[in-house]
Image (cartoon, rainbow, N blue to C red; front, top):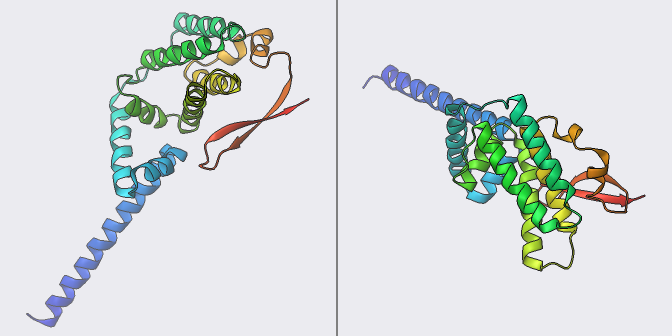
Length: 213
């Protein structure tokens, strides 16, 4: 084979390789931008960037096939009132309130058009739209899990869980934060008043640091 032919083949192969690399980099950037912190979490969980990106691509494609709906005013009002009622009973029955908040949040996801049958799929599909808010959902699940594992001696994990659930709920049901009155919000803090600052744990997930005034 003539040297010029070999040169053409080599150049063509290098060009194809460059295109492949560029497409992969574009895919990395697209998924990282869309999923935010969830991208790194998926890579850590999967142990492989390739497997994580396959999972995230599947979730992104699933989301793009869905018709996510805005809530009509009546449905939004109903959800807001239900959340306020659940929050109001937190002081007297915190564990029950957190369980009810979790269930109502799932119902809100379903009403908006997100899948709810599979927990992992639901979380990733919602993360495709709301990557920051889904971190609050994961934080709520961890706090509630700690409470269930450690028993009923301390309700702080329940309070943390409820507050993180509310962050995602307020994204799915806009206006819920403004429509729950100050006295209901105060029930989460009991007799104490706090300044709250968002921080992150060792894995970069949101926690809540409180400084008593």
